[in-house]
Image 1 (tube, chains in turn brown, red):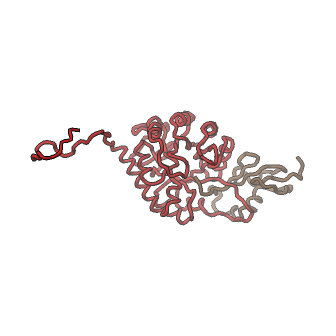
Image 2 (image 1 turned 90 degrees about the vertical axis):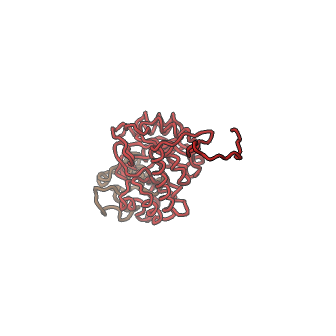
Image 3 (image 1 turned 30 degrees about the vertical axis):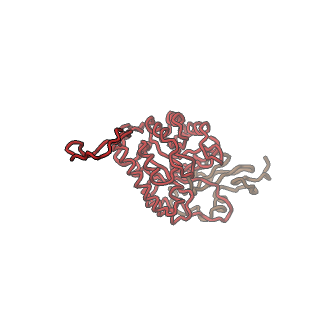
Amino acid sequence: MGDDEPLIINGQPRSYETGLGIPVLITELLPGSIGSGDPELPTGIAVAVNGIVVPRGQWPRTDLHAGDRIEIVKAVQGG
Amino acid sequence: MADTETTEAGATETETGLTIAGTELGSRLIMGTGGAASLLGLERALVASGTELTTVALRRVQAAGSGVDAGIWTLLARLGIRALPNTAGCYSATEAVLTARLGREACGTDWVKLEVIADDLTLLPDPVELLAAARQLVDDGFVVLAYTNDDPITARRLEDAGCAAVMPLGSPIGSGLGILNPHNIEAIAAAAAVPVILDAGIGTASDAAAAMELGCDGVLVASAVTRAADPAMMAAAIRGAVEAGWLARRAGRIPRRDRALASSPVGGRIDQPSRLDLAL
């Protein structure tokens, strides 16, 4: 797949840029959610890339590639 | 489970607590959070319920700039209530397994309320996909609380697959129809060696008491509280009902009889020759 193929984030296309990482995407969708609070405590947010969950500690060093399918979810009322 | 059973984890039931996978919860009432009109109303209801375990769903973060929803996650953390991520809205084992893994990461727990529904119309569990997902998640180290139909055989299969609790429905989600097949619920509770938690269909307090009297170890309630005219008052009512039903079950109800049985002494009565004798 070429670098012009978009990322698919929560089902929506987003243009891929070299060096783009998960923290940037999280900050775009959920401003202020990174860096606040105890880094050891869960935040109610989770990320999967191509169907594999990426633990928060690995977000900064996870490389994204053109065409990746990314799910960014959070805990909401339900059940 | 039967009253004197010991769980697989080796923990013996206590007077009041509900033990799931070796973890004791002080309340037998598990709350759902869906359907609440306001976060403040939900908070009051959760406090009034006395619950120590409350479900959350996982959903895609939508539009950019929608901001941090400091809602349910922050609320549960502040109240010190353990979050139970669910897989609501999943139609296949594949979706449910990924959602469970996202829930584990998001909520920092390996507990999951596993739901795999068949369609939007009935919201009934799909037993084939449910069992497949349960097996995968148990293999993956999850503590699986499986939402299931009121079918004793499916419940047995789920227990055999290693589920930590089975959660049969009383009636369809959100219907408030109560327990439509009490015989099946009683049979599931009598046979299971893991906790049985009545989930879905509770309409009001008496339904929750009935579930406990049938032998369930706990009750999960969402809509009955969140959509009640006064959610906090209904939460308090159902809390009392769960405790009352639990006590009544342990107290041992009298057998049902076809005919009356006098509770006052039958000897020593004054003569009442004119009374009707219907010779029943």
